[in-house]
Length: 245
Image (cartoon, rainbow, N blue to C red; front, side):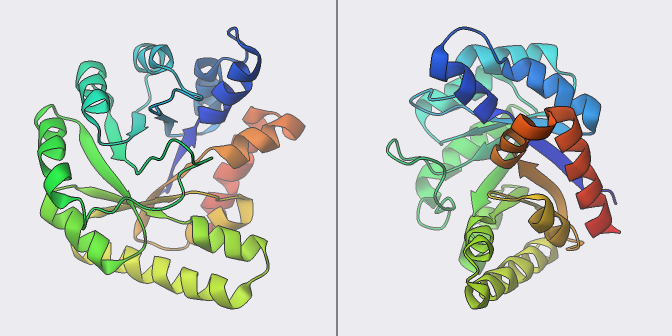
């Protein structure tokens, strides 16, 4: 089964917001990514609107035919927006205003009582739910109890360890990811992965047969400065296909 690629356009909006106005347009970037081989588009609507804005989500939903994956915190405001927008999927993530990026996985085990009614609302509306979690058995078990059909495994610690040449830690993190993917699949969950991935790490993780989707954003937008978004998405697609093969 071909590994799906979801391209996150958050940081196209980051560049736009640095100066204001409409350029560069994350919706235009989404079109380019899809034409280059992306299977869907991911966008994180944060509480502080630091990059993606409400109108971006409305336009992505209206103008992009491919699936839209809305990353968001499980707050009352975001649930209202998701129910109004009806994206293909919602990925619930932890969020702290002071963080630069999502720093860890959602504590589904510790927040089960708060998450359960929100997940039920979204499911009733026909929105696919995924939980962005650390590669931990307790979080996978919690996702099952909550009725979330999909988990997205946080790959950031593994990628950071590799980048810093902390190879023993990287190997330990890789084992955690591999075993978590196997456990989640055994439990009947669909397995996605993302955070910090580049060409090399995406090719490596693509070899895990349990993983069916990768969501990648910051790296692709950064590389697009040098090589253009179309070419970079094609290179990522090729790396993932090599790993899956």
